[in-house]
Image (cartoon, rainbow, N blue to C red):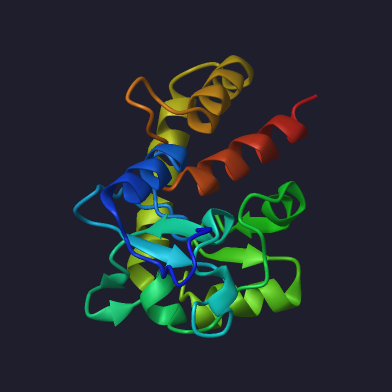
Amino acid sequence: RCTSGAVYEAIPDLRAALLAEQGYICAYCMCRISSTQSRIEHVLSRKQYPEKQMDYDNMVICCNGETDGEAHCDRSKKDNSVSFDLQDANFIDSISYSSKTGEIRCSQASHQSEMVDYLNLNHARLKANRRATLEGIIEECNKKRWATSLKKMLEIWEDKDDQGRYHPYCGIVIYYLKKKLRQLP
């Protein structure tokens, strides 16, 4: 990065570091990804912010960005930049999901627009995948005592597993479990 004239290159060590840091899920849609089925993405686009092309804090790892012939995530984003910080707790708290449809929403209008218009995070397949993941959790919770199982499940879904991986589509599950825990007496 400090070498004069150096330009961004997607080297294997960089990909491996981002995969491990993000727990092998796409930074945007949270689907499962691997080293062979992923892309390194710049949150602030290299075209608009060439000075940020070597900034590790500006890089995330994403899925291939296409499902059913339609672009989402970084392929849909193209050369646009997103203004939100994916790691910021306030941003994360501004996200909600529909448990009926799997739709993702953001209470901040500009971020909502970026999530839907730039990233296409409400692509039909992504919504269906989030919904199916949540249905499995709801079914599992119905088999157990709610209060106890909710807390244990939340711990499981917030943490990486023994292989250093987050569960795919963990965002909707974490949102749902936290919401249910707040509703308990």
